[in-house]
Image (cartoon, rainbow, N blue to C red; front, side, top):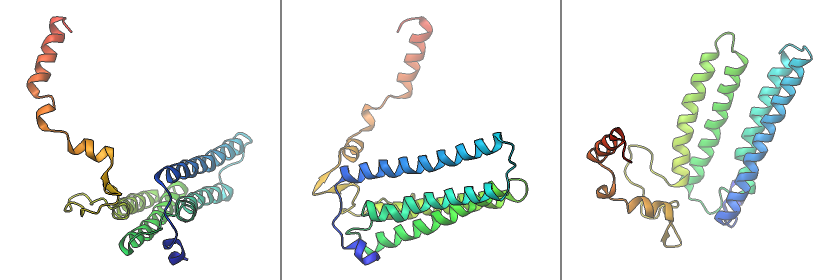
Length: 192
């Protein structure tokens, strides 16, 4: 299955962006439906019980499946990626699943040992973020710069506008502390 996904042709950035918006909207709709169901149930006098826990776990599982499994198919997230990127994507998906399990533990166990679930969530999300950086070709914080063939930095031999504008900023054009003091003095004097 993974090899089949890797051998597909990649979508354009615009197509990926549109699909990502649809995925985000689907996730928000899932969460909204769950919140409405919980509010209606509480208004009818139902106490949180097994139905509540099952709903929370179902929503978290659905969000994970939508974000990682369906996204890999719809967006072709693994298409024409290196072995390292595919490995990073799969690790990030697994770590996010662990994070959602920790979040579920936290939400279900709010009256007892919920802090353990919160700790699992934080650790897993942090580790997943590092794997996502590897997947997207960005260097992790504290690591050496990314190689010249970085997917995010260069596409079809041209640098994207965001990275080009960041690299063209010089320290000479930035305001200094003296500029700030001058603005403060002008505002105290009443002149703008």
